[in-house]
Structures are given as C-alpha cells and as structure tokens.
Length: 376
Ligand SMILES: Nc1nc2c(ncn2[C@@H]2O[C@H](COP(=O)(O)OP(=O)(O)OP(=O)(O)O)[C@@H](O)[C@H]2O)c(=O)[nH]1
Ligand SMILES: [K+]
Ligand SMILES: [Mg+2]
Image (cartoon, rainbow, N blue to C red; front, side, top):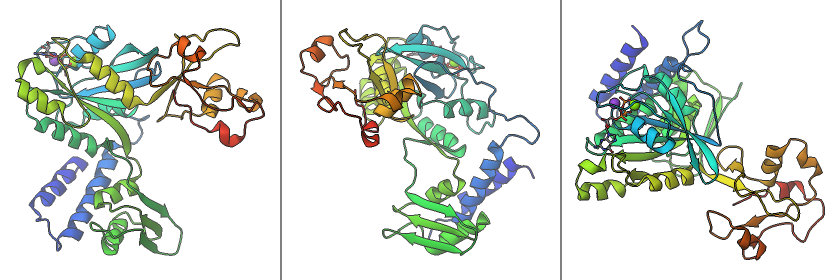
C-alpha cells in the first residue's frame, strides 16, 4: 500500500472513532502515525536531488511574500495591481502554472511578491507551491469573498498537513532526546490534554525510549507531535478576501472584522493600501537611515533589518554594513522618529525625535549594548 492510501486509511479510522476519554490514547497514536506518514510524503524521493524547488525563483529585495489560494480567487490580478508586473489573469482555473515574481515598492523598501498556481484540496502537486510559501517571510492567503467561508479552513488544513503553521507560535514544550535514562515527563502547570501515559505512547510510536519532556503550557497531542517532528514552519498569514465588489456590505463588514483579515477588491482597487500597510506591519521590517557627519541622512536608501529574520540590534545593523565593522564601533548615535512612518529631517534636527542611546557615552559600547534593539 502506498503512503497516500495509508494516510487515507488512518484519516478514515480517525473519522469513525468517537472522541472520548477511552479512545484518547488510540486517537493520539493514530495522529502520530499520520504525522509520520505526512513527513515521509514531504521527503524528496530517494535518488532525486531534492524536490520542491520546481518553482523556486531567486530571492530579491528586503522580504518575500507568497500568494496562496484556490484557483481563480484573483492572485494574479493582485500581483499585477501591486507590482505592475503582468501576470496572466483569466476566468478559468489554473491560468497560472508557475511562480511569477514581482516587486512591491513600499516605505523605501522592496518586497518580492510571488504569484503561484492555485492549490486544490488533496493535491500532492501542491508540494512545489508550498515549498515556495515556506521560503517566504509571510503568506497572503487569497480568498474569494463570494465563496464559502469554509475555504479558509480547508486551505489551512491543507497547509497544516504539510507542516505549515499559520499565525501560531511554537508550542512551549521542551523536548530533548537522550541516549539513556528512559523518559522523564514533567510540566510546570496542570495539563488537561496530555498525560504521562499518552506522552509515552506517542514517543513509543516514534521509537523514542529516552528523552526529556517538559510542558510549559497546557499543550495538545498535536502540539507534542509538532515538537517531536521538529520540522514545522511557523508563519504569519494575512487572510485577503478579494472580490468584495460582488458581495453585500454586511458580509464585507463581517469578513473585515475577522482576525488577521483584510478585505479588498482588485477590480475596484478597494483597500489595497490597507493591505500593503498590514503586510508591512506583519513583516516586522525596521528601516535604519545612516547619516554622514554634518550631512542630511539619505531618506531614500535605508538599511532594512527584520525583527523576525536576523534581528534589529546595533550588532545586526553593523553586520549588515560589513562584518568587520562591529569590532571597531565605539559608540552609536540613534534617533528614533516619534510615531512617524516617514522620518523627516526636521524632526531629527529639531530634536523632537527621541534621542535614544549612547549619546552621552562616547566610550566603547559593551557587547550587551550592541545587542540593544533598534526600533525605527
Ligand atoms: N469581481 C471581481 N473579479 C475579480 C477580482 N479580481 C480578480 N477577478 C477576476 O477573477 C478571475 C480570476 O482571476 P485570476 O487573477 O486569474 O485568479 P488566480 O487566483 O490567479 O487564478 P489561477 O491562476 O487560475 O489560480 C478573473 O476573471 C479576474 O478578472 C475582483 O476584485 N472582483
Ligand atoms: K484564473
Ligand atoms: Mg493566477
């Protein structure tokens, strides 16, 4: 039996098993079996040079955003609107068959936007699409506002099946395999989903007999499996409801109020600016403008750091300029614009912007200070 059939079989068994205290252990075991099979499915076939890079395009700019969605929700139309790069759009499904990159210019930064083929439920060909999604900083899940709201759940489930976790943080479970000593199971609080026996059973399924497990939150079996698998990718996702021009205002209002959601219409160019600002916000990019002594800073060419990738400390900034810079840095003058998205020279010169650190301490900055966060 192939992996896909075995997955189907386990899913069917899970569906017909009633959820209660008595079946809890059996269901947990099935979940672990399923997770193992899905991981196998993601592994490149033996002898190949690694699958999943079929759609890969070169990274460009300060960040990367992938458009994921069912066919014909308007991904290509959106790419064309936001980047000016033409991506064929049409009323038939699977108009887009490959990955098409475009560049969004926003807040003096360049963000790479990737248009991708539509995903359909249960299609393992989605592997290339998902590999590209995993390589990006955030995902825009494009949804058709006029279609079933269930689409969002279906797609989320599809992505979860391949190890993507959207808008979730990694479970607070410490897990370490050991050579000897058996299983040590501990928790810092009362657990309501997982007990020692269930944990042992899951570990047994993975043939792990020596390990340290410490629950720091009331996590579920699924969380425990995610931690054992160790290959999950935690990503931010914005749910983009397109085509609001064809639905009523009450529905628009309801969709707009959902968490992490933005409603838009490509056809009527509605709310695209809101989408861009939300995207920018979620990417956690920080601009640092350098100022030569006695001159105005160049406000068109910032050094762009990311709170999610790499970090935003003085050290990160120095390393960004040149690897050798850090050891020579004696002090740093940093201005922070007060709540302004576009810093103005006047604000800085007038001293109204908050003068942050090290201004009165032109001595060698400590390693700790080099790790101080830059927030601009
Ligand atoms: N009413 C309406 N139609 C739209 C909007 N945006 C896109 N469309 C239409 O939706 C259809 C599909 O658009 P595409 O951009 O090709 O969708 P896609 O998601 O890229 O589709 P695939 O590449 O096939 O997966 C086209 O006929 C578009 O004109 C919108 O805001 N409102
Ligand atoms: K289409
Ligand atoms: Mg398309």
